View 1 (cartoon, each protein chain N blue to C red):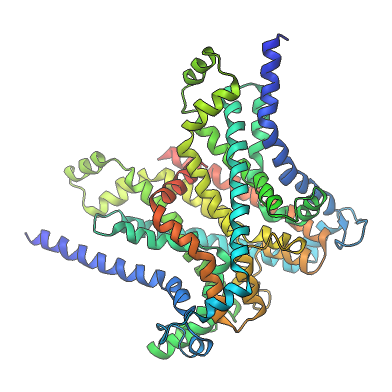
View 2 (cartoon, each protein chain N blue to C red; view 1 turned 135 degrees about the vertical axis):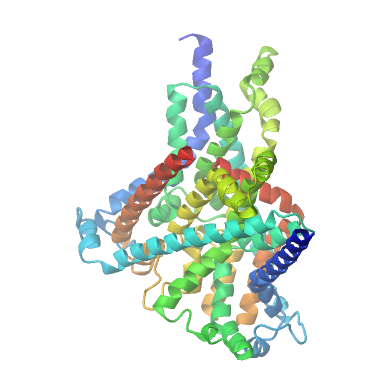
Length: 279
Length: 293
C-alpha cells in the first residue's frame, strides 16, 4: 500500500512538472498571438501580459499593407506546384528503379539520391544565375519547379525503400492481363503508395511553406515569388520598432500551419516520423 | 537486342528522365558552377569572372579569420545542439509515453514550434530577449534575465543555441516517442519479473533497445545543426561583432553582401567537404556502435 501511494505521488508530481514545462515552452507562441492584439504603446510598456483592450487594428493594417490575400495565394501555388512534381516524378522514377534492377538503373539511382549530401547553402550562390538562364526565377510556377530538383532526391529515396515492400506479383499479374507499364503504375502501384505519399507530402509541405532562403534569393526577380515568410521578414527588418505589425504579420504566416496541424496532428506526426526513419 | 528488350530500355530512360534532368539542373549544375567560380574573382555584375587559380582557397586557410571563426562557431553550435536536443527530447519523450489524459495535446504543444518557420521563431525570441526579459526581470527580480543575451558574444552563443533547440525539440521528441513505443512490452515485463527496479529497467533494457532511434535523431540533429542559417539571421544577423556567424551565413554574407562571389563559392566548396567528412564519420561510428549493442 505504501509503495502504491508513493508511486501515485510521483505520478502527480511528474504530471505537474510536465504541465509547467509545457506551458513555459509554448508561452512564446502565445505571446506572439497576444501582442498582435495590442497597440504599440502597450507592447512596449507591457510585453508579456494579456492585452487590456484587444484590437483588430494591426490586422486591418497588415492585411492591406502586405496584400495578404495575394501572398497567401503565392504560398499556396508554389507549395502545390512543388508537391505535385516531387510526388509524381519521384514515385515514377522509384517504381522503375526498383522493378528493373540492372547496371543502368543502379547508376541512375545513385545519380538521383547523391545530392542529399549537398547542403542547399553551398549551391545558392550560383543557383540564381543558373535559374535565370533557364527562366525559372521570376514566377510562382518557376519557383515551384525549382523545388522539384531539391525535393526529388529525398522523395525518390523514400519511395524507393517503400517500393521494395510492394510484392512484384501484383504488377506481374497486371502485366499478364495486358496492362502496359504506365497503366500498371497508375492503377496498381500508385494507389498502393498512398501512405508513403502522405509522408512525402507532409515533409515537403512543411519545408516549402516555411522555406525562407530560396524565396529570399529569388525575391529581386519578381513580385510573384514573394511569400508570407518573406513579408514577415521585411516587416521586422524595415520597421524595427513596429513590433505590433511584425507580430501580426508573423501570426498571419504561422496561423495556417497551426490550424492544419491541429486538425491533422496524427497524420503529420506519423508522416514526420516515417520520413525520418526511412530517410 | 529484341524488340521487348529495346522497349524496356526505352522505358527505363523515359520514366527516370524527369527526375534526372531536374536534379541535374537544380543541384549538379550549380554545384559544378560553384566549383568553377571558386577559382575566380567575380562580383556578380561584370560579364567575365577573372581567373585566379587556388588563390581563394589559400586565403581561406591563411588570411581569412572570419571564415575559420564561422566554421568553429558552427561546430561548437552543432555539438551543443546535438547534445541538448537529444537529452531533453529523450527526457520529455519518456514523460510523454506515460498514460494520462490529454497526452496528445501535450505532444502537440511541444511540436508546434517545429511547424513554424525558423525565421519567425528567430523574431519571436528576438522580441523576448530584447523586450520581454526586461519586463520579466522587473516582475520576478531574476537578474539573469536582464543580461544582454543578444549583445554579448558569449551570451549570444547560448541564446542562439537555446532558440535552435526550442524550435526543433518537438521533432526529436516524436522520434523518441516512436522509438519508446516500439520497445516490446513483454521484454519490459520480463525485466520486472527478474526483479529490475524502474531505473534499472530504463537504463539496462529500454535505452539499449533505442539504438536505431539514437542513430536517427543524432544524425538528423547533426545535419540540421551544421546547416543552421535562418534562426541566426533573424535573431542576431551574425552579431554582436560577428561572433555568431555560422558557416552558411558567412557564405551568404561574403557572396551577397560583400559581392565576392568567387570567394563565397570557395567557402561553399570547402564547407561542403567539411559537412561530408563529419556526417560520414559519425554515420560510420554509429553503425558500428549499433551493431555492438
